[in-house]
Length: 339
Image (cartoon, rainbow, N blue to C red):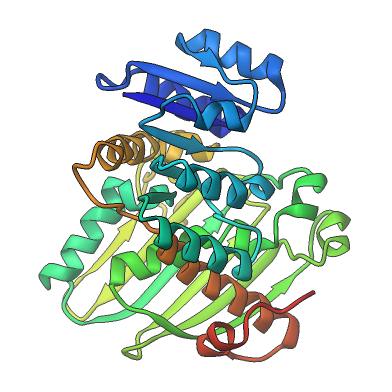
């Protein structure tokens, strides 16, 4: 199979390495606005360089991985679908809800499969918790708690164009909440604070946040986020049912410590990077995409899924700004708010 890669930043390089080691991928075609960087990456994986997006999509690809800057995602996905090339696209598919809707309409009309890069769906822990819940081993689900905390904030220039903490950091939590529980969120109530660098407030963002989410069966979920978790990269999901409780991300490398004097857990060195925590999941999702591109399976995470998560992020952002609970149906019906 011949697979294209659009974008050779950190995540693009990681994807190139995974694809180069896949037994069915015989050629990689690499494109980036920085031609020297594209050439370096292509050389490292035995690939070739496409000098433009048009050249990339005219190269007879069996599939393409979109890992370029967020602002380019929508146009690249549309171009790939117009060329009949199956697409793997890093999140988000587009910059806002309206653009995501446009991409969804476009790819639906084309019939070309698109897989969105929500890698937590391919993590063994989340998959096991989903199965335990669906098998009834947890009993009736009553509470969910999600945590996403970075050890240090991204650069100020990134925050200014990230779309805010809900669209950038928590979009993964919002997607995995839907996927693991099989439920939809109907109401969101979010609050946040600025405790760190001034560039968060200057961008209209927060660096700490807490959110309450009400699922369509009445289950309550809480979600906490931070850009300043100095002990390491902390991503967890707790599912509490009437029969049992399971926690995803509770392991020897969790950046936690117990206050109990007779407890040594966790014993390992904390995760520092998202790529360490989810290395296997990133590989698994690309292996799944090879199957999608080969026509052996349907997309396991569609643009419609990405839009549903974006609706929740938009509702959370609106709740934060307007200091009130927001019904998700408000966002679905009225479109995005403009800050």
